[in-house]
Image (cartoon, rainbow, N blue to C red; front, top):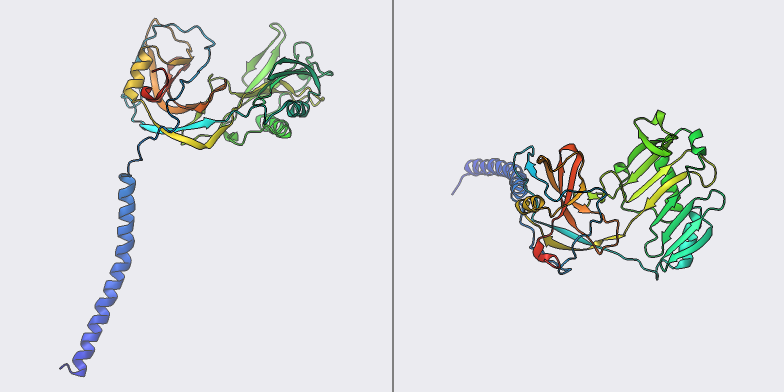
Length: 355
């Protein structure tokens, strides 16, 4: 049997080593947890296999190229890495909502036209297209009743009053445009204002047209291009690299109806909550398809078939259509020297209709 002195010594040891153990556990547990998180970060669990819930998808309609594209272009890969990139092998496809006349009837279209500054209906050019005119400025508006996409044209070649004013800066012009579209309940909630691009313009009398200039101080007008926010960390790109599906030329002339010189608004609502996952082509397959002429050349740039086009960058994006389509689909983007740009459907061909 232990004496009181021995019991006290044992108790002290228990307390001492117990305290050390508690301190050790206090340090060890967070360290283990951090190590597990670090391991999981370096070795993430693979995503579930693609569900292809929409079935086979229609091929992307890229539209008509604005350039004559040779059929036998040659390409040479010269990326920063010297190889094809390592890209995701699956991604989401989103459903594009077609609103239809039951949501935007003719009376609502007339109301929106009024908010855009066009109170006088001229004629109906098709079952879903209306033509309006501003009787004071002679500007015209063509608008559809399906998604309320529209175009505005001001007769700037006859009325050059905008030349009496300096161009607004990008912040001013974006604010004016946002106010206009918001009044008509047409400001999209998926626009990323930080992506706004602008071009300074000036009227050239000798050619009777607008030309780009390099500085705001030279400009009489500014063109504002709007773009959707990234989705799944991928950009959403329009058909033409130097334009946008929502693009307006804006004056600082405050006369009623003379602020918008030109503009087109094409915006198909994407249902970001309604999606399915699909397998993607490998970069090797995409590269071979580019070389065999299967890509859409968005911009030939200063290139020709006389020598290979140098491709510097390949990445994934989404294609923002300017004609009605049912899905927002991923694409491979090929960027090359002399402003070359090409798009190619990224969906594995077995999941495309007609393939």
